[in-house]
Each structure stands twice: as C-alpha cells, then as structure tokens.
Length: 366
Figure 1 (cartoon, rainbow, N blue to C red):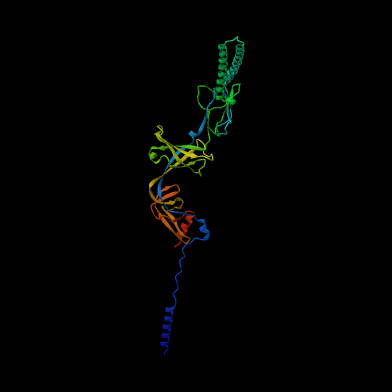
Figure 2: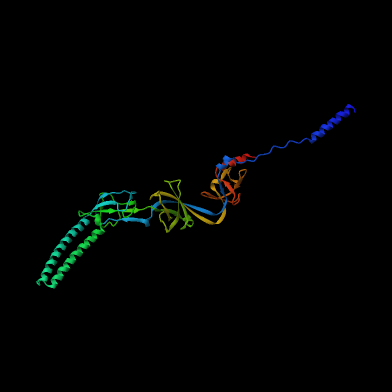
C-alpha cells in the first residue's frame, strides 16, 4: 500500500468512529415547584357554583329596641331635688333615679293623718253606743249608724293608703318627698329631667327611659330605586365607625309602608343582638342588605384575584409542582365572593394567600 492509500483509510476510519459517538443531550428544563417552607405559607380555597348575590348599601343609625324598654313616669307633681343618674348610666333594679318633693304626696300624708283621727273618733263613738245599747239606753238604729260611720272612716283611710302605695308606698315620706327607682336592670337611654326642674300634673310625660340593650334596632333609609331590593327576612351586615373591623349580622325585621315625605325614603328596621353591649343608641351605621338571585355562576374568593395590565388572574393549585395561571372574567364582586364567567372549573383549588409571589414565579419560569 502506498502512503496515499493508508491516509485515506485512516480518514474513513476516524469518520466512521465519529458517527458512532453519542451526541450530547439537551439540558432538562426544570418546572417551578414549591419548597417545603413556601408550601406552608400558602392557603387554598375552592371554586364553587353559587347563586348570585346582590348587595344594597344603606345608611342608618343605632336605636334602642322600643319593644323592650321601660318608661319611668313621675308619681305626682313637684320639684326634682336630686337627679342621681345621667344619660348612658347602667342601673340596677331598685336603684334610685331621682328624688322629688311633691305637695301632692304631702297632701296625701295630711289626709292620712286626718283619716286616722276620724277613725279614732268613730271608734270611740261606736264603743260608747255599743255600751249604751247593751244597757238599753241606745237603740239598735243608733248602734248600726255608729258602726257604719266607723266603716266609712276606715274606707277613707284605705283609699288614701292605696293612693300612697301607687305613688311609691315605702319610697315616700311624710314630708312630701318620693323617689323614682329603676324597675329593671339596664341603661338610661333617655333622660328628660334634671335637678331643680318642676313637674306639673298636666305634663303627662315620662322622665326616664331604660333599656337592657341586649338587642338593638338599626333604623335605615331606603331610596325609591332600591325599595325592590330590600325585603323582610333578607340577611344584613352592619358596620360602625366605632368598630370598623367588626361585622354585626342580622336580618331585615320590618319595612315601613309609607315614604318619608321630606327625603322620599322608606324606613327599614334591622334587629341585632347586642350581648357585648358594643352598639350604643345614636351610633352611625352602614347597612349592607344581601339577597340571592335565582341565577348561578362560578364563584371564587375575592382574595384569590390578581390584577395585572387590566386583566384578572387566579393561580390554580393541583400539586406543589403542578400549578398554573388562569385568566378570569369578573361578573360581579360581592364582599369576599367574586362571581366570574369562566376560566376555571367548579372544585378547582385556588391559592388565596401569597398567591402574588407564586404568580410571579410562574411567569418567570419558561
């Protein structure tokens, strides 16, 4: 073999060997997966198919329950010599509210003293007539007349005692003072009298209103275009300026049948439990009335939404290494619920905590 032949053979051998060498593999693309610590930072919630809710926002005011209050009236005319409570005070049953000096009460005690004197005279006359009757000196007619006079004197005393009992009984004194006491445990929600005020017999007005405030009313206004959206029995959420982070739950208790001629609104009343005593009369309240429509739609937690570039997204979770971004079209947002037109399926799990971090990681992962 000549040198040219040998070199050609070597070239062919090298080429054949190179063809049989393994080609280098492409680098494997790793998918984004949650680490153990990151998985503990997220929270999940589900997509549901729910009836679409509507909400109507009303403005209102806290008021005491007028069906569960006691109004304290004066027992006679006179002057208030001491007022022992102020508006908002908590009172116990039997606690003194006010001390009043009354000419009427003093007159009742004067009449009682006169009645006692009349009874004493009538008793002596009866005893004397009875003795004379036994001796044959007085007639039976005179004895019966003396007996009737004694009975009339006792009846007059009983009448005066009844009046005193109505006007306070043991809470009155012979110098003409009487005290008004609280008939129940509760709070002073109205007060119309102060020390030194005079009370006339023709006033006919109450002096104190006491409520236990275990439940309260919220009186709200409904404008004409919202009347059809509010009905008795609808669920209600109430928010106050005093407790912005607290939600009070109740129901529409009563609707007025007429509009207020001044502002053209209809009154709606909401009844709320107030076991903790947080709600006070005259507090401003925001009332959200909720109602379910007959139609259904997919519903996702509002906190699951991610907004970017005018679009809305959620992160669907199927596993720590199986997550995807889904675009959703919002139909209506009602508080913590958002009704959508699609993009996810009923039962899908969505990330509702730290979802923005996961969303960005999925965007950055090819």
